[in-house]
Image 1 (cartoon, rainbow, N blue to C red):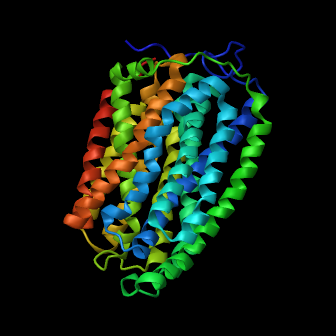
Image 2: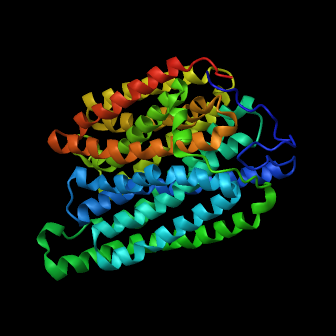
Image 3: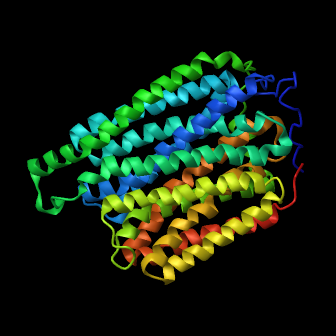
Length: 433
């Protein structure tokens, strides 16, 4: 039987065990703004992978499965870093850990400079892993913190609203990134180059990538400093380190364990679709767009999630979150089938419209899984963030299907993921608190 979620209001003077004390009155709005900024930044940087994949695929002459290693390197960090990040939160508090995570993101962005100078694909993967390690740390902080900054009764709505800022980042960054990163793609075919000529071409074409990420690094350093200056806004409560086995024990709770599996499936499906959008829209049987134009269309995929999260924040106050989740997952399946079975604009826009259905899934699965965890919310957040490793596994499998068959048939794998998520929505339609 799950424990009841801590019901204390944000104004309570009692600390939540193993975490920071919730802030008082006037501090709460200020901290919410910082959390919203964190959601915006890590969402935007994550979505840049959708622009990087076609760029690196062309430059290094990669198959779909090989190109998806970009997502594998990135999302593997969630598997490796999430639990340690949760322990850091318990030991040093939310805001100190957030500043650390943002600083690590900046280091990863700076590593794009030597990766570009060397013109080696593996170094880009290493840089992406470091960026993702920082993002993982920030996400372990942000999800439970936004739940603490208010009453438990509105946690679903509040987390969905915060995720809307994540979607704002994922809408803006790919559009700007496409203009900066994909513009030079047209030109020399890499297959015709060898040796020093190929290396020089890769160094020149990836310079714009390193410049983009260098600009991000500067902004991240400023953000880390601002967060560090506010680290005392929450009173640190240092908790004893828990054993790994004690943390894993949470998976024995059916609602939480099933939720962890659905985070794995959802992130995998969402990332797989986003990673293939540019190449899907470039197909003559779809829209036949050039790389840069197709890249700017990625903003519609993530923009749908932005719109849907604002709508969902209100809808989740009125309708059972489980029912909303089941309906959204079913809508994704329908749109995937339309994209698979049709051609032209109908196929392309059906795939892009899946972003609208995706909008409420992550925050709703996350909050449904965490219902009843109470003081162990930070540990639960760490495990749920581990499950984001689905973004490292399902996209390469989808890419492998695309190499074996074609991009349309590869969409059947994300559709299967959404089917299991819809079932979880039905299972968790009743509140656990």
